[in-house]
Figure 1 (cartoon, helix red, strand yellow):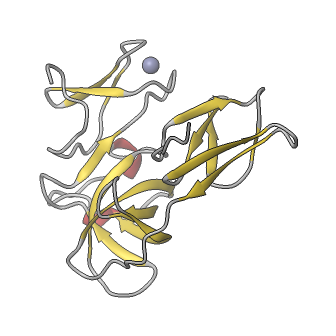
Figure 2 (spheres, rainbow, N blue to C red; figure 1 turned 180 degrees about the vertical axis):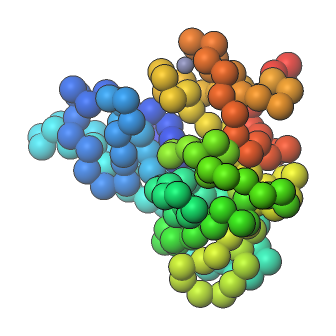
Length: 184
Ligand SMILES: [Zn+2]
């Protein structure tokens, strides 16, 4: 019965449970924010995630996976989860992505390249918290994203992302390691 969920995964809708720990709400849908086991607490009508633990800690040069947590004009914060989906860190670490570290060419607006809740692969540039991160590499960037209109998964088609449900087209700084590619 115990299944493991990954950040961004849909758990239920707002009407069913009250979001508690390790979850967030987007367009009325409650999603996991951490890797772990979802607990549907029917007594208190709460939903939360019991995280899976791993004692490692990222260091400079490491490539890690995280979720976009907050986006401001020139900076985004990332919840760093682990080296991959299978082996998450014991704790969620805070990472910072400055607009200058997005790609080699200069960009104007972070919102055109990443969105809240996106699953990203980044390189760590320092050895302390908050971790400074970079996306300047073809394999770095968004590896899984969800439709801003309906919340379904986006599939990579060429250089863009298309919603599997409503056909909405979105753009991101897409990693070559994007998880859903048309035809695969
Ligand atoms: Zn959609």
